[in-house]
Length: 496
Figure 1 (spheres, rainbow, N blue to C red):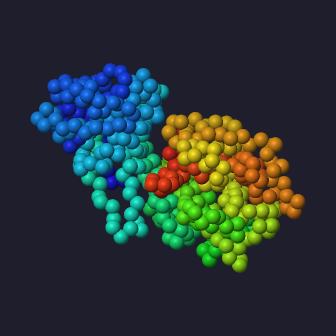
Figure 2 (cartoon, one colour):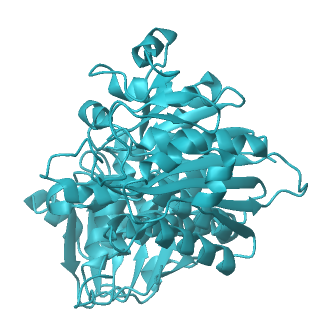
Figure 3 (tube, rainbow, N blue to C red):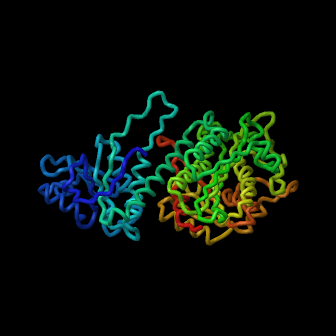
């Protein structure tokens, strides 16, 4: 992030700035600072609102120029919705609208007063962190594979006018900035094409992350090492590709006791998914470069963990492979042996994510984890059920699932739980192996999690299916950086 954030300790009306950002209500009174500016500008804000130029709907924005009336060169009014209904969702819409308007302008600096507004069931620390995160995420531009690079952002400094002391809000600014950095790292990796972002590229990126942050240690296992470990399931996915599969391990030792059990993240890193022999339809197949967004999310989260130097131990394991059709590719009906010793009948080679994840989930047993969360763009059924709004949670430990759901609300990075009852397990029965890799046309997201659950008996585990939330299609096509905010907030709440 290139924008610098400072906490404003003086009266924002007395400070010269390119832009003063103020909130207005759709229904309700007038926020204190907005009222003071309105008075100083001969009721211009009130007149503009009465005229209907801005109604105050959450996220709406309007620029105003008031020459000679204030030290601010111009005002940016931001709608915040109804005062009585001003909750976390409305605040995020307002912060996002402000960020988009500011970064699209020529302003070099700004004072933002939105965190002063009372948000239902949220603290001012939360409001500051969310604001910084939204600005940082809005700053992101993808141009790595373009001949013409994105124009530089004019905005350099943001002063946050808040009611609490600057000392108490300093951590909130840092958390918001590190969250945005992690999201943008995940987005950049997700947006890269498959001919650049290969399993080897992910491994090199993870190694560079370990070099940059001394509190991270990275290890990369190649195919020969995985073969010795018995990872026949993971290796079967990459058989059809010239690209070597990788298992990437990143460790953050932040706890005072070095032997403190870690919290483990597992990421699916299919850097391109053709479906293999079970070839996908051609339309939209380009978006299968996003099939490594679970890995990208884990890498972005680990970057943020390192930047914040969280006082816990966190281990990340990324199973990276490319799923291609060739004369060496795994065929439908083939049977592979997983690291756990369980045999798997591969009925559909396009259900490959679970095949790499199951060996990674067995591998993490050696860390004796406190909890394990895997993150994967796993099923189209998740997209059909939840669109791009919510990630899907399934778990073998209800308290863990509930903590993730609660954290998703706090982070405004939504998730919802599906059941994983025993009644679904028989759908995975096979006549020729211990388990089939698909469960038929029904309950696809659930049976995928049921498959993974067969490899998680030794720890508390949750599965996040991010097939809908990890990227957007259409005119806004691109990786979202989710669920980095959810995972980082979950880890911030944990103790060694």
